[in-house]
Length: 293
Image (cartoon, rainbow, N blue to C red; front, top):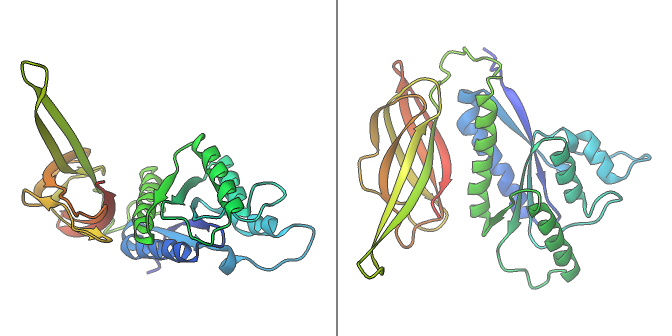
């Protein structure tokens, strides 16, 4: 039986000094497909100009050809910058900048990340200056992200893809909402933290209480039964320490359960949470990347 899916195209936009990051983003997209396409009936298609553009010579410049062939058709844009903005076009500060602005103006989901690693010793000062100007302009119109390493970028891109795909799935526009085996519960984890200070009679801080927990929420339409989960770190460091058994007999729709955790010194910045649950005797599992730093 053929699998009916909805395809969301993901444009990987970046200048030429980010080959490692571009490969990392594509790997994350393909990993997401392996984990979710069969169950969610959504497939993410990576788009890269160096792989997808068809050479054309005519009245248009190279960036216009890329825009027309696929950049302007992308549902999601993942843009990554290291220390360069890229070569200017006739319409924007660079080809990557043009792709970002055009996608933003037509309402696509646009996620932009800037490297927080030390600037390479052989960087181009003019390019870096132009990049900082563009970054400031973008930040005046929304939220941009940073990444410390390729592994850090992978975790954050995964979170963006989950946000976009889950949001699309929540719209009710799936091609086959009654497909057998399709889970109707959707489990998502978030790290919750708050601290409380108490004062003595002199108004001085006396005690400090920290409340750290992993909130496991069912944002689906039916209850998740026999819920379990486990956490593994992404990159260097350890996962948070769970203070209770990571199980819940039942999580009703639009409800959550909190599990106390401790994020200790030496913990990784992000981790992968694998959720497992049952519905009407069928078992399901999905994974999600979250941050606790």
